[in-house]
Structure formats: structure tokens, C-alpha cells
Amino acid sequence: MFTIYGYGTFNPMKVVATAEELGLEYKYVTVDLGTGENLQPEHLARHPLGKVPVLDHDGHVVFESAAICRYLANVNGKRLYSDDARQASRIDQMMDTMSIHIGRWLAVYFWEEVISPMFFSRPADAKAIADAKGWLDKQLPYIEKVLSENAFLCGKEISIADTFAFASFQIKDSTSVDLTPYPNILRWYDAMKARPAIKKADKVVFFNQK
Ligand SMILES: N[C@@H](CCC(=O)N[C@@H](CS)C(=O)NCC(=O)O)C(=O)O
Image (cartoon, rainbow, N blue to C red; front, side, top):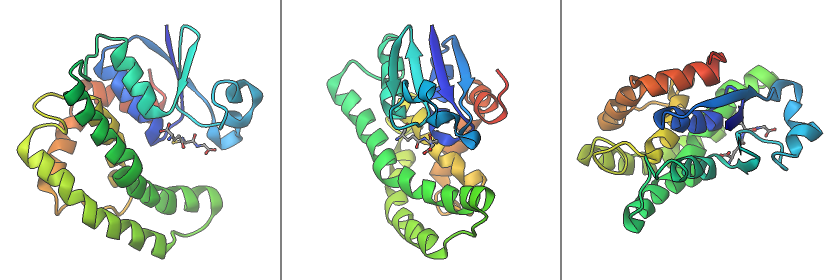
């Protein structure tokens, strides 16, 4: 039995989108970050840093969204991943590029334009946004080139790199991130968004409807 602990944000979306694309049966449990439920002993026992998402697979508890996505693929015949070391390294490379670089700068927009005003009554920090934009202007052309050569981020088939990255790119729908200079990223984004599994994941994570 898979249980995913999450909240209506982008890191849990990476995991739920992966679970849905794999066609898994799972239970989704909301951990309310708004009331600090993530910092209660029950959740700290699952995740020592008090974050979501967390996966519990029959008592085997895993945190960090990338690790969870790989685990879900590995225990499901490596679907959406690969048993070829070279292809797996390409998928890992793309997920790390998203986590460490591009996803990080997209998250700045979400933090500054959505979280800060909503939860801390603080306006977006224009300098933080300008810095993030500067980095994205340098880094997004790489993703645009990748997607001009293939339908998906790691080739002709969807992989966990796509489900993982899609969740970060969703930030564009609630912030001023402008992807119009990148038609192939937008083509990929719209195609991902239209997939039944992604629509389902969106409902589960952002509207709590299983
Ligand atoms: N690198 C982690 C990031 C997890 C993370 O920061 N999750 C946020 C929600 S998207 C969270 O739990 N924040 C609560 C807090 O920091 O108190 C992952 O990918 O799982």
C-alpha cells in the first residue's frame, strides 16, 4: 500500500503526478502546512525536517520528491525510468537540473509572488524576482533546445523527468514567469497538462479530490 503525505504545493505534485502516470493505487493524506501539522511529532517521525512530500510504502518511509519518484518507478518495473544505466543517467541529470537550478528559480517566483503576500503579508521582493529571472533567462534556453529535439525531456517517451519537471513549471500559472519566448516548453507543458493522469494529480494535490 502506498500512502503519500502532501499539501497543495509543487513538491507533492511531483510525486502524485508520477504515481498517477504509473497508474498506482495510493492513499493521499494532507498534512496541513498552514497549521504546522508538519512540525508535529507524528509527521517529524516521517520526515525529520518537517516537509512534504513523504511516501510510506508498507512501512518503508521515503522523503525528498526526486527520491520518491525514482522509488515509485523502481518498484513498478522501472516504468517511466530505465534499467539502462545511460538512459537512467540522462533522466537523473534532468531531474537534478530541475531541482538544483531551474526549479529553484521558478520556486523563487512562487515564494515571492504567492507565499509571501498570502502568508506573511509581504509584497514580492523585486530584487529576488530579478535575480531569478536572470538565471532563468540563462538556463531555460537549454530546456527549449531539448524540447525542440524531442517530445519529452528525455526522449520520445514520457519519464519521471517530465512528471517531476511539470510540477515546477506549473508555477507559471500563478506567477509572472513568462515562457512565451520558449514555444517548445509551452508545447510540452500544454501536452503534459492535457494528460488524464496529470489532470487527476492536479485535482488530488490542489483541490484535495481523490
Ligand atoms: N527538496 C524537497 C523540498 C520539500 C519542501 O520544501 N516541501 C515544502 C512544500 S512544497 C514544505 O514541506 N514546506 C514546509 C516547511 O518548510 O515548513 C523535496 O523535493 O521533497
